[in-house]
Image (cartoon, rainbow, N blue to C red; front, side, top):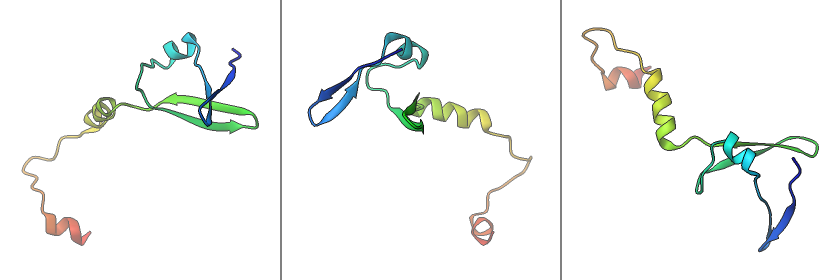
Length: 78
């Protein structure tokens, strides 16, 4: 899908087609990352929101062994 590069102040801008917006589930104000993937080639991805990142962390949580107590001094000695 071809896109046109336009002047926007001192910068250049590209309008994202609706298909890309839908695929990346973008909405106004979202942060995206653009990475050079090769010569004259880029990748665009939507950064996770804070809520999405916290949900991933929560899914990774594992229960602590019964009776476990955190000891700050032991943690610093490791």
